[in-house]
Amino acid sequence: MLDLTYETPKPKVIAGATGDWELVIGLEVHAQVASNAKLFSGASTEFGAEPNSNVAFVDAAMPGMLPVINEGCVALAVKTGLGLKAEINLKSAFDRKNYFYPDLPQGYQISQLYHPIVGEGEVLVDMGPGVARKVRIERIHLEQDAGKSIHDMDPHMSFVDLNRTGVALMEIVSRPDIRGPEEAAAYVGKLRQILRYLGTCDGNMQNGNLRADVNVSVCRPGDYEKYQETQDFSHLGTRCEIKNMNSMRFIQQAIEYEARRQIAILEDGGSVDQETRLYDPDKGETRSMRSKEEAHDYRYFPCPDLLPLEIEQGWVDDIAASLPELPDAKKARFVSDYGMTEYDAGVLTADVENATFFEAVAEGRDGKLAANWVINELFGRLKKADLDIEDSPVTASQLGGIIELIGKGDISGKIAKDLFEIVWTEGGDPAEIVEARGMKQVTDTGAIEAAVDQVIADNPEQVEKAKANPKLAGWFVGQVMKATGGKANPKAVNELVSAKLGL
Ligand code: ADP
Ligand code: MG
Image (cartoon, rainbow, N blue to C red; front, side, top):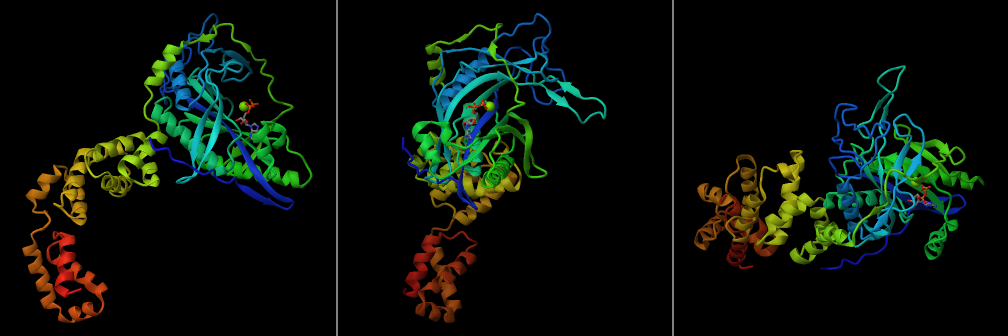
């Protein structure tokens, strides 16, 4: 496999009155495990169901109910860890995180504080061709989601929907290695892409299946390098955590605002309070939710209802053997196998569905041409029609057929576009359509020659001009193409025009 080498991007710098500031960001991403059943019950995880219809007795914390671990969720967490090149802990354990909230019937959340199932890993965040930052993953733990309080249905009452209660989440905690708002969004994007490739989380941010707590601090140039060297957090500034962000755009806006807020405080001689904040997209600002002083005392302790989770290396190895090819590997392979640019490979591998479609088109054909057609024609047309690749009216085999006809010289690129449009609207086999409608390119030099002679005979003035300025030969090529209904082989036309004009 080709190893794409990369440069590390520069951190975002904000100039202040007292000098430059740099941003330091660490993310805690909550990713819903792609499981049909909850982490400790058999209740469904279906989105959008009737409120309180997906609730087992244990989810509602009925007396005497006991949690039973869902092996499928554990397997998906392990798979996620392997996909992030992380350490898998064969022994992990569940803890109770105690707090009171109406949407948490148990009065505690079962989580993994002390012994998470996944340890250190990494994510390579792409910041443009040849530029990437390695963001370290500190840990991934499994935990239950809480329910939902609904405050806007009645002026006097709040309602609670327990459908989400107990749904399995993976909390993916990064080190504070992210250095700017765009990088934070790119990190979430890359993580989402990997999870979707792995099939361990559907990454639907609108439905809240992927959401992030964003930790932001600012420091002076050079401080982050000292932290990197020593892993001593005292070189970094005090952080604030912005809770529950589920939009890439808002993540960036919130970081930008929060960094500037902290800089203003520091430049004013004040100090940043470590606190939890919320982003208000309407006002474009973050505001305090709770300070460190009023922070919860979670009184964590090992969950007495669940034995420590012990898994076997052989089971982990089986999961490792089932891992699909991941985005970075696929991208590198596309560059080396098909000779395409890293940029194009990035576009084609953004979604695994796109990549699979492309490979079906390119198989046994001209890969570069196939990449061009998939990216420029097909994606462009799909976007215009607001369709996903799964719903493309032109199948991979049909597009492959069109590319074969171009490759063989049967049709020109221009005719191919017409053919694509026909296949898009009417369907059918490209080769048969070309045959039936007489769209084949004229490669017969006799016929082309006749057309060239005609154009030259009809335009003596242009001939004189072209002889003085060979660049004008293109005009003759255009005229011949027009005269042959776009079916003349452009290469043959070019050669004949040059020869006949004596250029
Ligand atoms: P807690 O559990 O209290 O939130 P953690 O140590 O788990 O604390 O850190 C949470 C997140 O905060 C991690 O993603 C970490 O990388 C990030 N973080 C820690 N220190 C800083 C800092 N100074 N600036 C920005 N992010 C930070
Ligand atoms: Mg935290």
